[in-house]
Length: 156
Image (tube, rainbow, N blue to C red; front, side):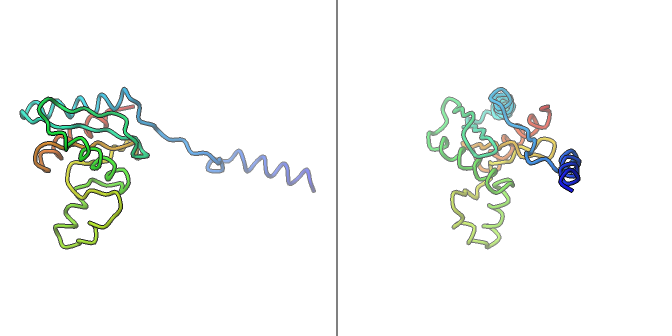
């Protein structure tokens, strides 16, 4: 009986879906720089000075750049937007729209900034991080972040 249980356990362990550890993609510094470069190109094309922030899937800062002439307050705001996108697994604009639609309770969510400009980075259906942009209007920040998201879609 004991041999049967051991054999059954070994067979079950070899079946797909039985493994105990997940396989996931991770954002690298090199990839973060490519994402930020695409966002910067969009900002420069429009003569906008912004802060661009890329965080990993745990909302930890991976890369940040402040373009010349951008206000220093945008350093914190860009990070907050990116962290919001990771924590909530959705663009920060969705939360902004909720507040504008009357869901003011969203203003009480901890460590969340409901302002457009933070967008999750998803590759092959996996959240790998987020980009946050601050420095111009929220819609323009969102446009710049969108260019970073498009670059992330090309990552392997």
